Every structure is written in C-alpha cells, then in structure tokens.
Image 1 (cartoon, rainbow, N blue to C red):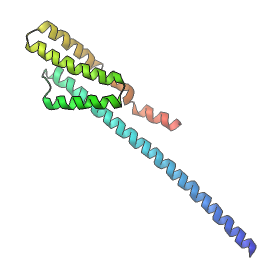
Image 2 (image 1 turned 180 degrees about the horizontal axis):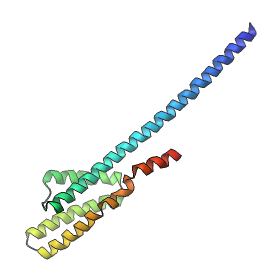
Image 3 (image 1 turned 90 degrees about the vertical axis):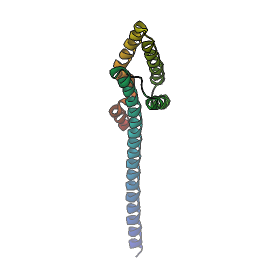
Image 4 (image 1 turned 135 degrees about the horizontal axis):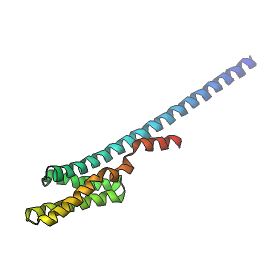
Amino acid sequence: MGLLAVLGAIVVGIMQVRILKRQSEIAADQYQLQQQQLRSELYQNRAEVYAVAHDWFDVALSQNQLPSLAMEREFKKAVGAAEFLFRDEVSDSMRSWFLKTGRYFGQRDAGNMQEAMHLESELRGEYEGLQALFEPEMRLGEQLESTDED
C-alpha cells in the first residue's frame, strides 16, 4: 500500500513537471509572438511615415503642385512620428524638405526661376536618396533574424 502511494506521488510529480514544462514553452511562444507583433506594428508605422514623405515629393516634384493643406498637416504629423520611429537624421531631413518645398514654390511663383531650379534640383536629389535614408530602420527581416538568435 505504501509503495503504491509512493508510486502515485512520483507519477503525479512527473505529470506536474511535464505540465510546467509545457506551460513554459507556451509562455515562450507567446512572448515570441508578441515581439513579432510589436515589430510588425513598428514596421507599419515606419512604412506610413515613408509613404507620406514619398507622397510629398510625388506631389511637389512629379505633379509640380504645392501639397494641399491636408497633406501638409499629414506631413507635419509624420515628422513628429519620425522623431520617435527613426534616427534624428530622418526627421531633420523631413523638416528641411518641408521648408525647401515652400521656398521652391515661393521662388517659382515669384518668377525667380534660377533659384527655383536650384531648389528643385536639391529636392530631386533628396528624393532620389529617400529610400536610402529610411532603409536602416525599414529592414524588418534582418531585425527578426537578429532577435531569433537572442
């Protein structure tokens, strides 16, 4: 009888260890899933800022129009978000583009074509470097691989 009680206690102990091990595995899986969800949200927020910057250049340079007030508000909001989502260089560049775009259209509308062409050339150069500027923080695949090693 005593032997059966001991064996029963051992079996219960083994089962409890297995249950605890499985709970730990589930908790680790949930943690990994939460990390991936947060990275995905971070990437989505960064992609939205990039899209706003791209649209800004598209309207100003490709369509040769001063961006609308709604687009201006969206761009300013994106600059604020960029301060937290990217290196300082990104938000600083976005502020510069905003001011330079205003100067470009001001010079163009005032008939100062030489200065307008100079500003347009600078903006086009910055537009060509847009992807490279945003790229370090947009490499989600590399970020996921690096955390898998942790």
